[in-house]
Length: 489
Ligand code: GLN
Image 1 (cartoon, helix red, strand yellow):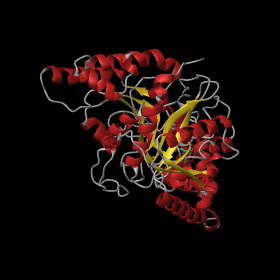
Image 2: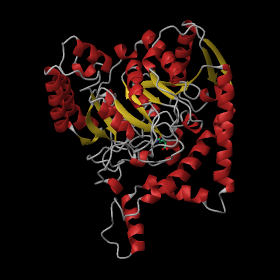
Image 3: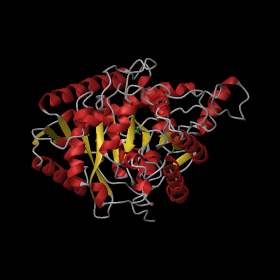
Image 4: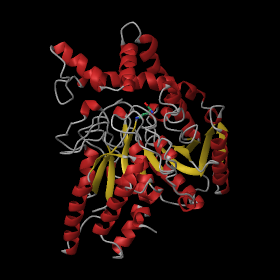
């Protein structure tokens, strides 16, 4: 097996047994980036040279007998939504094309404290608004399973980089599905933690009550390991919650006898592709065979989740993006002749169409005449969504749904129709609205060999249950051993 095909826990084994050095590992990844990046286009900023220097330093420390952490020298990729000190952070927008953050996000500090090596900042939809990574100002990322298709989004660069073995794992952000949907499109594992488990400090804000940082990995064990690194209370983020330190790798257990699984029938309706449904049904049968108790139930409030999400997310985005005024650290129009023109022309020239659409929609739903009819009602529905999920979790440990109604679609297929693009999140947005944790793991492929993802959801701070259920299924079905991206053109 190639070095770059290994998971992080497999790399660690080989480092321990002296079969591989940190230097060899990083060289292998950098070589892989040089080979595959021209096809995949996952990076906004490559950090391969710095990465190699860092690897050499860590190698020297090891050779000098210094005791380092277990993740020292392991490469990682970072979504370009997360601030990195001294390195460009663009949110894939012309607005922040030359922005260099003066500080690290808290999650980045944690990655650095482990001495992991950041090999690059990864592509995404502009300000994380989108579901295909086609709305990046810089480039369109391609799906490693079929280069004519999207990798999903908004964290498409992160998902594609991991699937293409250009990094062993990566960080992303998820506001309405931006980790889970691309993970499902690229046949890897993607976890969005409970709102408040991971600090948002230094993460560019899209919709602050929904945003959460999470992980992309090749398997569930790596997912638990990386979650261990990034989870934890942060004084700098007032929405971060202190639940004490947990070791999520303790949940990597194969026995799920008696696990109670709820299957919400609304998530298996007409809009879901038949092959996706079939694959999910097989996965549910598998869980039954493994000793889980499965029951169908109704989560009918979910039908309002998409509308609610787009009202709340746009309202918050219109406020959050107000800071990009052309005055401070952002793009400034050269044409502008007055203060008003600086605002107007800079924003007109530097925001893409989707971002503008959301700002306009958000401003509208917050305007005095329409606030009650849209924003306030959306908040009320949000409470109902939370209540229905809470009721469900009195009965079930886990809820299983498809991650997305379809497999990865073709580049250009949905980019001109916002509504079509929004529908790609129909299964994921309600989880953010309720602040719950959700994972996507691969559960099969369609006739054309494109991966299908299954979403497992648990109650707030139920990450351990999710990891256990996902791990047991993965160990039984071994997707990674059966299927691999083909880079088909
Ligand atoms: N695709 C959804 C949107 O466009 C979700 C994005 C996200 O999770 N960042 O809003």
